[in-house]
Length: 65
Image 1 (tube, one colour):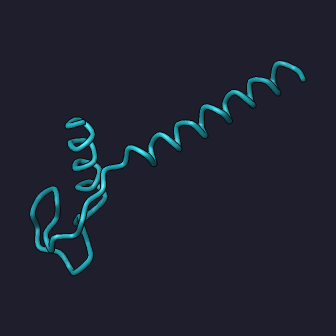
Image 2 (tube, rainbow, N blue to C red; image 1 turned 135 degrees about the horizontal axis):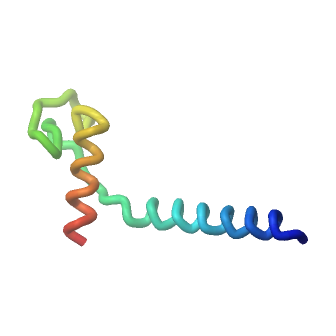
């Protein structure tokens, strides 16, 4: 195995670990009928009005931990 193969193997392991970590630390949230970030009224089953609100909420929730 040469250096490039080893570097690729390490990168793959780090990526897999990061994905596992992100999945295990993602905050859970139940739909409430309003955006969990900005409180805008939403259709049934939705939690956020857009990706930006979702990301803001996730950042805030992760900081709480």
